[in-house]
Image 1 (cartoon, rainbow, N blue to C red):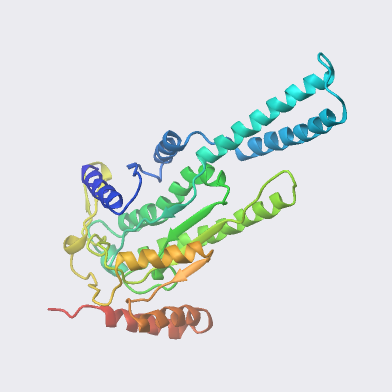
Image 2: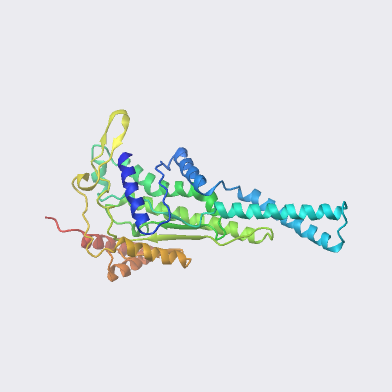
Length: 341
């Protein structure tokens, strides 16, 4: 935990150096209810407490309806002190004040964009993991906890704040090209990234259905949600240096410690990142795609133009000619593998 805090502080410093107005760090296990609550509380402290969408919408629509009827009544009759018209005018002013207060509260708690960028990798075939002292399941579970449940948990905590945004729910989900095609030595990693695609594709449909239903009711405002899944290939980050491998050792109480990087043990596939794109370029591409309302953006497998074509060809072949796609995936991974010394 202490090591993660140090790394988060480094990330905070980098964000501030790049022009971020403010950065709030939250260290939490989002796979647990406590972790989700911790993120929600941090957002509340920063933005305020979002009211439930249903209650705020019904209250707002009711107030607006009252305001319109009262305004009409006040305009039709002259104001007489002590009469019902004066009471209606006062009620009209109160309704407007309440509506303004609600508008300010809504603007305060809105969250314009949520970027979900969780990632742990692996680089060993499943057999090697299964035959290791710790077995394969600790690695499989850790990958799912971080890559899949981590993203879902953060979204759950942010959901009320995103729903309050006048721009609609906006999500940018960083997956991987391995979330479209599944190469060897990436079993658990591919599973976690495929899970991301399934969840957020389904969520997009749910949000769209809510939007369509809301548009049918005149009293509610509805903005189409934007859920973009990014599928990067090779990027020059430290994810491969911290990958999970077969050196899991059981400790007292049944807990496990999971090694990574060069300590991951033999059998790990080392990939060449010479052609890999920089994190800055990768981020810029997905930023433009999301701003344009794209559902997805697919990157090059290795950072090259040929790799970009391969990504799209393999994705298409996986549907119409899966056997050919498998062979092409294996060939591509061999090309990216570093020569053994």
